[in-house]
Length: 340
Ligand code: NAI
Image 1: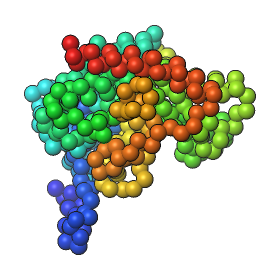
Image 2: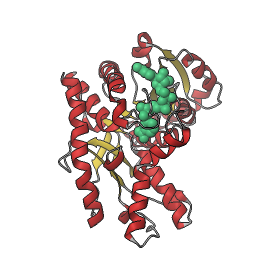
Image 3: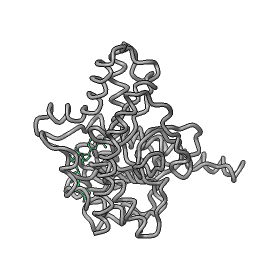
Image 4: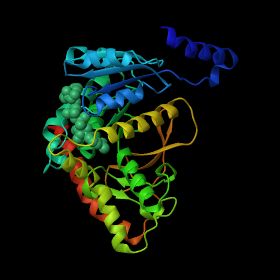
């Protein structure tokens, strides 16, 4: 198409000069669950990413082809295709470089993320089995809750299919980081984009561990009670949204923003950019829990390096201690679901 030409031309030029170091800059990205509250704004943001040359939108909802037509009218390079229902799933996934998954039900007031398990587990399992077949080298970025259990599910499915690469399966915890930066920006009276902080552990309640002691710039809170309060606000920020939406779902717009940022970082890594770091929930041997979130370096094959989480102060060590049993339980639930 017209819009694709400039990118193709650049690739040829680079290729002619120095073939061996040419980086891929044209990626196929799939959004599975593309018509939902997260899926639509996430797709809107991904359509604006210059590294995306094919955006494939998959969902069960009848509106899905229409969402694709709608986005296809944006004058950005990515070609957009719509795929509705299981019979069109293989075509959506085939040859993907990155599959972002926000498919599944969200929380209503009074629900925990674990209450979503039964519905969402089979959705993620079935998507993972198609990824194993149609795009075994794709990076999977799982937004669907409970993330702590969904990443083990996808991993077990890929293992059973003999194509598992732990560096290519991520749980998306970026929203926890985005929230922490936003709240700290407010407290410090600075632009939140200048704040950085690792949020480690997992993505639910006590497993969300913001390392406030490592925030840059330092958080302007001195007494421990305020630090505890801020920690708990970050842990419960999702519930803040669920309550405010009063039955209308959970975080969608901020999640789409966070998901697009994570996806963009994965693609920049795939494209060979140096020093691309994000927190993500991955297979890990840093703690007793088999999966754990902390800063990772992205490269041409997904996670290039687990950067660990540095020094924890006493308060943060206690948070970690509280998180591990919960993580172990969530992980076991996921693994058992695939084994049964
Ligand atoms: P939603 O209900 O608005 O959208 C979900 C979409 O998934 C719908 O369009 C539905 O048709 C689709 N879907 C259902 N089953 C499917 C299947 N088998 N294949 C493909 N698509 C399917 O929900 P929303 O608000 O977009 O949330 C999606 C998920 O993201 C929920 O599980 C929610 O808990 C989770 N979430 C995760 C966050 C995180 O930080 N990781 C933050 C916020 C939400």
